[in-house]
Amino acid sequence: MKWPKRRQNVKKTIQKVSPKNDWPDSVVTLNENSMDEFIHRYPFVVIDFWAPWCAPCKTMGPQLRRLSKIYQGKIAFGKLDINTYETIAKQYRIQGIPHLIFFQHGKKLLDITGVRSISALEEITEKCYRSKY
Image 1 (cartoon, rainbow, N blue to C red):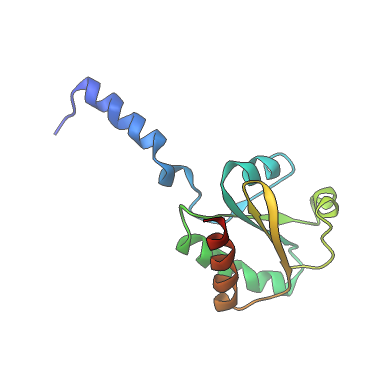
Image 2: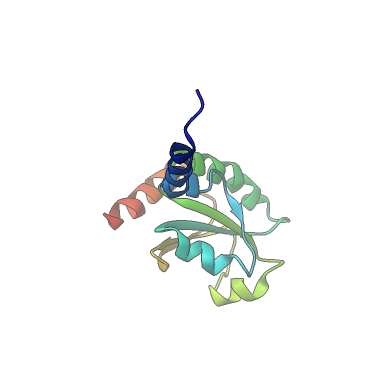
C-alpha cells in the first residue's frame, strides 16, 4: 500500500523522533572528536578503555557487545583505544586496563578496572542504571 504524500512525511518524522532509532545497536569505537559528544548525547553511557595488545581487554570485548544488545535503547556502549588516544586516557586517569567508566547525564558515576564475568557486569550495569531512576 502506498502512503499519501502527507502521510509519508509524517511517517519519516516519527522515525526520526523515535528514540530506539537513535541509540547504537553495538559498541561504538570512539576517538578524541566523538568522545565528549557520545558521553553527553545519551543519558547513560559505558566507556571501555582498552588496548589492542591487552589480552584481558579482548576477553571483555564480547561481553560488552552482549551487554550492548541487552541494554539497547537504554544504555550506550563505547570503546576507546588508550594507545591511540593517550591524552584522553590521562584526562580520565586510566591506570590499568580494561577500565570501564559509567556515565550518567555526562557525569562520571562509577569506574571499574579489570576483567569481570558477564553476570558481574550485568549486576553492576543494572545497579548503575537503576540508580538513575
